[in-house]
Length: 317
Image (cartoon, rainbow, N blue to C red; front, side, top):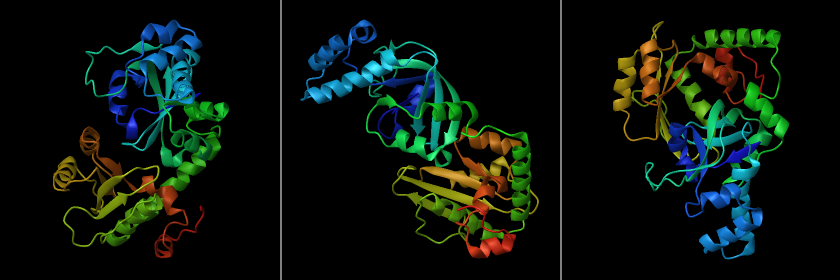
């Protein structure tokens, strides 16, 4: 099991996903030496081609990452990377041997030159990722490294969870989520604006302005100043149309009027039309409805006033 960093702050994620690959930089390295040379030959090649590595330790670290990527990582292995734009840990299966990208292939400023073909198996929101794997995915400051524990990573790649699925538990959990979502529709506009604001605060956001009220488009503006979610500003519109889903025209109109922000989202108490979901996906607009907040609404991070309104105990820390 392996982890890879696709550029600083994930700047190469889109480039790689469009091509179905993961990759590293080191443009000056020769493909034949990387693919067929010995470990010592690769070390000497890195020393010759990368004179900015001023110590044997730095040369060895670069050689090690290249060697692991091209020679120790095999077809069928799992590679995981973090996608900051979607806040996902992306689990992939390696499908091909190392290739060198052509100098004529796309933007030369994108620092991906040695690639492995992959198939994306699963995306897991980084906030839901098992703590052990999350720390070992986001923590290291290198380009390619082993991701342990291997068995846990394998279970996450296959099942999305480290706990094997049980139909009885899944049915009970689905019923609980339905109950929570149904009760949540009884909250009024101001309560729903508070739910969304609290949801973002629980994930580390700062909300400097007021929430909801008479604001035309943006009910919640959330800033992520640090941490796993990166430096971002989210603007979210919250709608509680009585027994009516939000349609595509409403979402796109508010999106156009939301101003300059990194991400725009829409929370609708009574859901969205099929067209709204399709258009939102095309525009990279995040949609939420009551089921998406179910676990959060059962947590201690919800205000006591909201729990009283819903009649819920605090079940989760």
